[in-house]
Every structure is written in C-alpha cells, then in structure tokens.
Image (cartoon, rainbow, N blue to C red; front, side):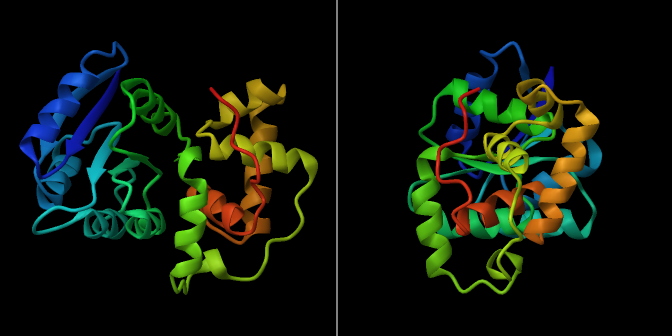
Length: 221
C-alpha cells in the first residue's frame, strides 16, 4: 500500500482527492495539509511515500515547500497537481525538486499511475503537455543547468532509457522493458545524467525535452 499526503488549501479539493484515491486498492491517504507549513510538519512527523502538492497555497506555497524540503534534506517524492495555466510554475517546481506533475483534470487511473511511478523511484512528465512545457521553457530566463551547454550525444540504448524515464518508469521496470539487468540500467542512468549535465532524473527529462531529445511521447504503461 502506497501512503500519500494530500497538500491543497481547498478543503473540497483535498476531500475529493482523498475519496477518489481511496477507491484504489494500491493507495491510502494517511494525511492532509492545507498549506506548505502543514505539509512540512507531516513530512517531519509521519512521512508518506508520496506527497501530492498544490502550487498555489497561502503562507508557504508549493515552490517554497519544495525549496524547504530540499534545504531540510526531505526526500519524499513529490507530485505537483496543477492547472492548464501554471506551466511556468510547473517548471519552477520541477527545478525545485518535484518528481513530476499532472493536471487536475486527469483521471483516477492517471493519478494512481503517477503515484505508483514516483513511489518506485520514477519521474512523471505528462506527455500531453510536452509542447506547452517546451514553450514555457523558451519563455523563461533560466540560469540553471537546463539551459546550460548542449548535452553530449547519447547512444541508442541511452535514448531508450531516457524515453522510459520520461514515461515515469523506475529502474526495475526499465530493466524489464529493455531486457537488461537492473545494474546495467543504473549505469545507463548515471551516464545519462553525466552527459546531460544534470543531477537528477527529473532535470534529465526536462533538459532532454528542451534539446529535442524526446520527439515522441513516452511508451504507454
């Protein structure tokens, strides 16, 4: 069972997400938070397996919460739930440490699939918003590594691994899909991070999107 905390300032939204997730046999909502401060308290006292985080909240918003998590070395995978108009905030959230994002109009199956992916150590970049994400990336001044030097060329196998990373697959699932040993996949992921000049899987997917290394949608799960 995957333990989830839902952080959203709207009570009705939190309750709706809780009730939906409780329809899944894979997920249990163990806590709720109305803002970033409450979320940080939950992460300290009863850390879940995955945090579902809204971006626009009073007091401490989603970006500030992610920043505080990084400063406090809190490594709970975080899935941002956002709306169509929040592309730039999503980019900021991913840079701040979020492991993925979804729009709030997704289906229960999509949310559960994303939670499952993050709980297994994967990332989730929603294919339907890839073009919007790229447009937002071009609009934003970006001092970090996403707009740094172009990546080194990737091998065909590294391209395969990268596409599966973008689909939210964890190392074990990539190994199964590509008929490789899990240790070999870990080596490919390490090589990808080095060639892309980034420090984690989420930034690897973002930079790959920016440089056109993921022209096709990731495979369906």
